[in-house]
Image: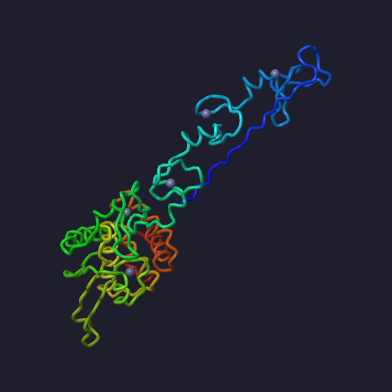
Length: 332
Ligand SMILES: [Zn+2]
Ligand SMILES: [Zn+2]
Ligand SMILES: [Zn+2]
Ligand SMILES: [Zn+2]
Ligand SMILES: [Zn+2]
C-alpha cells in the first residue's frame, strides 16, 4: 500500500496599499513601478510577495484564477499539479473520493494494489481479504465473511473458494499440464490431495517450515537394500483458498513431489525458491491483476527461503532456461 500526502492549502496574501497621492497626483515621489507593465503607479496599488501592481494589472493578469471555476482567487487555495484551485473547488471537484465512505480524500490517504483509495483511518478495525488484500467494506467489496478469527474473505473473492474435494481433480490436471510444459514430467500417477481445515493443522503435520505457503507434501517410502521400493505422496492444502491461490499452492507442492520423486536434495532456500517457480507459472498463466499482485508479493517477500530463495531461483531460470535448470538442479 502506498500512502499519499495531499498538498496543503495556501493563503493568498495580496494587500491593497493606499497611496497618499491619490488620483490627483501626476507622478509618485517614490517612483513605484508596476511589476507587470513596468509603468509608474500613481494610484492605490496591490502588493503581492513584495511585488507591486496597478489594480487593473493585478486583477487582469496577476491574481490567480481557479482552474476549476475560472473565478479569481481571493484567499485560501490549493496548488495541485501546477494548477490553482479555490480550496472549496479543490475539495469538492478535484480531490478523489474515498472508495470506502465516498467523502473527499482531504487528509492523507492510502492506495492499495487495486488502486482503491481510502482514508487511512478506515484501516483501523477493518479486516483485509486474505485472497486479494482488499479492505473488506460494503462499498469496496460488498462486504465479506470471516472463516475464523484470522481468516477473512471479501465478497469479490468469496465465490471463488475451493471447499470441495470434487473441485480438485480438474484443477490438478490443469496445473500438471502447466508444469509439464516446462519439463516437470514423469510425475507419480496417484497424488491424493486433501483439504485441511486450518493452518495450525497444516503446520502441525509439516516437517518443514511452511512460510506463507498453505500446503504441505508428505512423502513416504520403503527401502529394501538401500533401494526405494514403494513410495507414496500426499498433498495437504488449506481449505477455502481462492481458486488461483489454490492452484499456485498446488503447483508449489507438485514441485516438491518432483524433487522427492527424482531424489533431488536442495538447501531449504533453493528448494522453496524452486517450488515457488511452480506457483509463478500458475500466476503467469492467469496473467490478470489478481495474479500480477501475487507475483509482485512473491518478489517482495523477505523470507530467506520463500522470498530470497525465489529470487535466486528466478535468476538461475532466467539465465539458463527450464531445461538446463532442471538437469543441473543440484549443481546450482
Ligand atoms: Zn501595471
Ligand atoms: Zn473555483
Ligand atoms: Zn473514507
Ligand atoms: Zn478478496
Ligand atoms: Zn514448499
